Length: 219
Image (tube, rainbow, N blue to C red):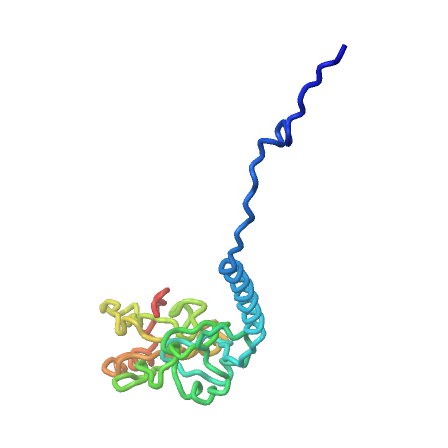
């Protein structure tokens, strides 16, 4: 008795027979080239930044407060080496020109000097201005006055006078502050006022009838 045999199907059977052929991936040389350029560009930029950060330039740093209208002095500036950041700091080689100029604004210690901070001629010391020295007694000036501050110059009549106090200069620039006196006074304070009131200020100052009031924040 013959055993019946099942016919064998040609080819693969099961899941393998249902797989479709995968087309080969298309190469995109343009994208590959762009990626290489981006990598190289980033590396170049990083290298330039590192090299740039290593560049040092000689600049001028202010060591003492220089009030608006006051001249820069050899004692108020020093040379420092800083990284070249592209900011237009004044080079130490230009210090001779700086010492012939005046502060356009009040410059604080530690400031790196730029061209905008200096002017060739001071409006405070120009025509129509006068410097007056005031030898003030205790109570006639606030403590801590310094060069570059702004003050009101006030006529304070004596106790026996019937006159009232009067402001002679609304915003005078403190040009110099001397050492305090031994008796506790403020020492000699030099202020710049309009020449039209300087005789009056000098007259009252000689009789001890002048006081100054600081104007915080005024420059």
